[in-house]
Structure formats: C-alpha cells, structure tokens
Length: 428
Image 1 (cartoon, one colour):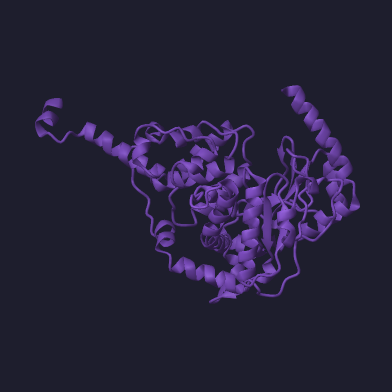
Image 2 (tube, rainbow, N blue to C red; image 1 turned 90 degrees about the horizontal axis):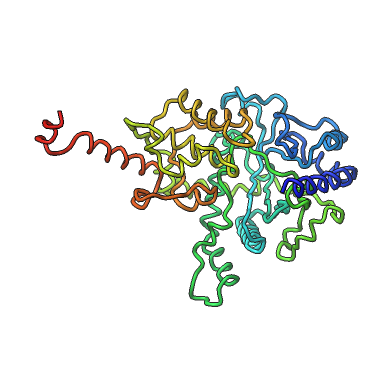
C-alpha cells in the first residue's frame, strides 16, 4: 500500500510540474485569485492562511515547493492579507467587499451531478439569472457560480456584503427546495424503469452541502488539479453540461475559458428577494434557526452522548469540517460554555490525522458564538455520510442527537429519583 501511494504521489507530482508550468494555466488561476484569499494544498495538508498571489509566477514557485492544487475563497476582500482569525464580525464585514454565490454539487455518481447541475441552471435562468459560470470540481461534481456583481449591494438599507454566509445559505436552501421535485423526477427516470416509483433518496445523494457556505471557506480554483484524480477543474459551457465526459478534464487537453461570466449589474436581485421572502414565510426555517434555545443538561458526561457524537470525538479521517459543525452546534445546544467547548474541540482536533488548522476552528467557533444556537443536523444520513452512525436502542426513539441526550438524562434522573416515595426513603 505504501509503495502504491508513493508511486501515485510521484506520478501526480510529475504532472503538476508540467501542467502548472503552462503560462496560460498560471494566468487563468492568477486572474481568478484577485481580491480572494488563496491557499495552496500539498500532499501533507494545506499551506498558510491567509495568503494571496502577488505575481503570476508565484503559482509555479509554490508548485516547485510541492503544491499540488490551489483553493480560494467565495468571499471577496479589500485586502486578503489583512484577514485575522482574531477578527470579530464587524472587522470581517469591514474587510469583505462582496461574495459570490457558489453552489457545490457533488455525488458518488457523475451522472447524478450532471442532471442536478442542468436542473439548477434551468432554474436560475427561469429566475432571471442568465450569466452563470460552471466548472468541473475535479472529481464527480460541479461548481456553479453567480458573480457578486449580479447581486444588489443593499436590501432595505442592509449591506449585502455584510450578509455572508446568511444570505447565500438562504438562497441555496430556497433553490434546493424549489428544485427537489424535478431532481427526484429526473433521477427516477435514470435509476428505475418503473416511472411510478419515485427515487426520494435522490436529493440526499446530490444536494449542495450548506456547511460549505461558511466564513472563509475555500473551494478548488478553476484549472487547479485534483490530487486524487489528476484531473483539472475545467470550465464548461453551461449549455453543454450533459455532454461532459471525464476525459474532457484531461489536464493536457484543457481549453482555457473564464469561470467568472460577464453579467448584468443586479441580475440576481429577483432571486435574492424571492429567497428572502421564502425564508420569511417558512416557519420551519425560522423555528429551527431563530427561536431555538439551548437546553440545560445537568449531566454532560461524554458517556451520555449519542454514539455518533462519541465516535466523532475519537477523531475522524474524513468529514472533519462537517464534524466541527456538528460538535459546535451539539455542544452549544446542551448549554456548554465557550471555554469548555473550545477545550473539547481543540482536544478532539489533536486526534485527527491530519488535523484541521487551528485558525479554521477558531473562526468557526467565533462565528457560531456571534449567532443564536442551532441544533445539529438530524440523525442517520448526515452521520452516515461521515461514517459515524452506529445506532443503539435509544437512537431508534430519537430524530436528533439533542433528543438522545435529553432522553438519556431523563432515564438517569428516574433511576436516581424513583417515583415511589417509599423506595426513595429505603434507598437512603
């Protein structure tokens, strides 16, 4: 196994040297990086943050030091190098000049991703957004981008640039809700010969991951390579998405195109307003994200946590960023104070190989504590996705990890304080 990994790494390193030496590739990456935070990725992990390219030649210099791919922010900054993990929300808002809406479509099946990308593009065009950028992720998915220029700069005297990640998340949820039925219909055609049996699991296989819309989140830059596939994150004509084949991402047959489309000022205004209106009329969204209050749990021992949380706390190989999201919201929801929460999460991160950057964790904790608590994701599919779902008998009775802790504490309290008063007296 070690030899095969070594051979694979050697092969990809050779490809990166030749591929990134192409001035056209360097220019495509450099042009897109302007006013964005960037971060190179190595086989050993990510490079330092914050960072930015000063010159086009910086790209190949990093490759010579071992960089294999490049990632950048959805957020647009006045000065990316001025970002600090110690910044509060006000400081970040002052430095952030805008954000692009990035829809990250990923699935185990490239055909599912293609179908949903086409559905999303059709819906965006129906909503008045005609200029849309599309690129291959490098693996089995696609990135769809709507430029910052397309959004209004203010809504009801609120600066749109200050509303990251709230408004991009609302737009994404709105799009997901409006396209779910069409996705089920189209994937059912592909996956079953019986047109009357709907594949209702399809959205869970391919819907955009909302957790990726978060402060300082990075995504693979256009024309960056993918370490596992050695394919390039090539830009695709939005009208030819269904014709895309993996061979089209051959790094040595790439045709350079702009990922960022030329768009009309404010052409996504209607989309944003529709999404905000949908949010305001949706009691489910408001109830979960606004009115939820932390539950005071008297016994917060880890042995009373659900199996999925206990499994995460042992350290994870995949899904670390999703696990951070889960742990922060789980611990906040059971009334854990910030100091204790930080100790738990930093201790957990030391068990991960490789571990997440401390700056990333610090940013996520700081951002979470600026907002009202929200519950962690519901059970099963989300936790199955990161390989930590091992339900016990109590799991069958609950829908959320918080419900598990509440029931567990009730059980313990009943044992400690029996209803029968005589038994209580005798026990003393």
